Length: 84
Image (cartoon, rainbow, N blue to C red; front, top):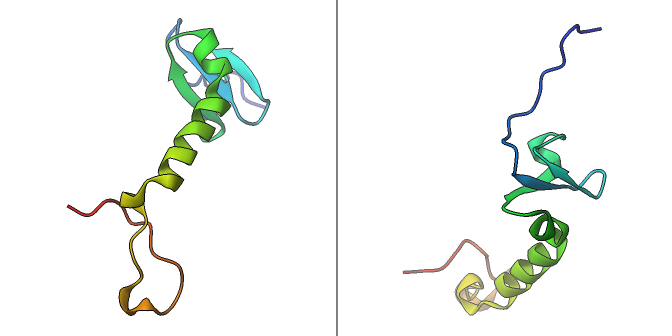
C-alpha cells in the first residue's frame, strides 16, 4: 500500500464530468480517460453529456465529414475529415 496517493493535476475552479461515476467534480478526481472537461462552471459540467450529444449530432450530419465512396463499391464512405 502506498503511503502517498498521487493526485491528478487540476486547478480549483475547474469542473469536470466523470463518465465512470456520472457526477460533476471540482478539480479532477478521476483519471483523464474517465472524464470530460475542464469546464468553466459546475453548470457547464452538469450538461457535459448534452454537449457531447449535440456535437456528435452536428458531426454526424455534417456533409464535409462523409466522403463519397471511391468507385461506388465497398463500405460506407470514410470519415477521415473535411477535404480542402
